[in-house]
Length: 272
Image (cartoon, rainbow, N blue to C red; front, side, top):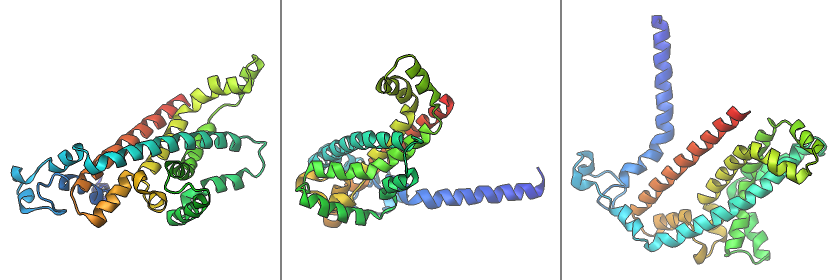
């Protein structure tokens, strides 16, 4: 390798490293702070000296003991799973319609369906609050599930539409020629082939619901408090490093989701 190429490669690697540090450092710094033995949000002198007594699982034990976090965790899982199921069903049906060449104004309808992704969440939350208030669904689990499903559906539409673009429609015609009904052909031929895209969209929809806080701030009552809502209250009302321990769990959860999505993407690419 020529000296000039070595210099360019070193500059390239240095720039990549700086970008990774810029993007990840504010997030990863939470992890070591969650092991602070003292109730502080900063590194103590003992932690910097790597003193074992300065590091502790104190805040993780506090979370494991339940208390203020059990109810929000149950609400987050209940709302996330229900909203994901609804968003996956609606988003998959919408993607099937959008990929039909006979459907008129497909681009316009697609723009409308994915508009919640580009609309500021505060605007969506305000609109949902007034809309669901008239229906008496604010401060109910059903209202938040419907609101989160609306926010998660665009993710399903995009991923399933991308998967359907690689689907061969002659397979459905072949199934029909053998006497299969449209529903049977979809269930036994098309759905298994687009399943990785559907699952990827479902994971994104679940993540969108699980860490959403703005809509919950507008619509939730005391019995619908979720993990992000509890963290928000903890920062404003009682400063506790237990929040950092919860944030560490959420980081691990996000990494697991991304790994699953990447696995599904590679599996879909190999199948196509």
